[in-house]
Image (cartoon, rainbow, N blue to C red):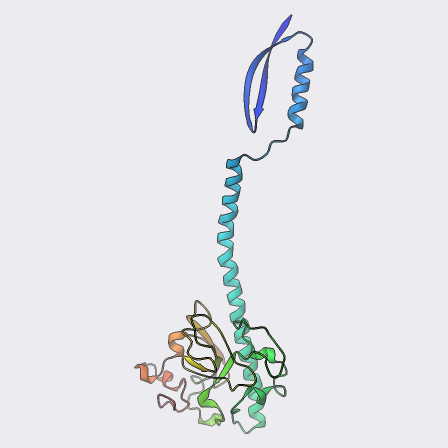
Length: 252
């Protein structure tokens, strides 16, 4: 004697049904064995499901990477401004002890170690060179305006506009630096020594740069504003005093 029974057949995650005729007495045993087999059999991802998961992960990574890069850049900008602020504090203390006359020549050794104990303050977060505390080879990322060396601060006509210090980059299409404590690192408009003539700023795709002003406040300038002076036909009067303390145009 037989009984009809519908059997489910699994292929991956797809299920098919098929009718079978079982002898009476074997039906219950067969059904139990089929259920037990289906419960034990693992079902893996299909190729389509795997591709969907990979695509989702790739999309999420594409969204997260620009956000992570932006956060990193903002952190570098903050550290760069903080370094310039610390340099300003060190300079103010130096000026108090030296009749308000700015350092000359290799100005870094006038500040270190008496007024700024760590070379790390002289190292910009945009400088990719290996940090060091060596008095001969430590990376120096910032330069003094060449027209400010040995200058009495009362000669600066507009200290709120005069750029006293800024990152001293080397020549090239990427942000790079070359200064060390053995070299008198200076900066003027879009050129710097010992680096050359950079093609842009240090941040925001080289469109902006940080600076320390003559009144010792710090700020962020666009690269186009950073290099302006009266010779560029700039209508902004303060730009005439950006690199020349007396505001007379091109410095010597």
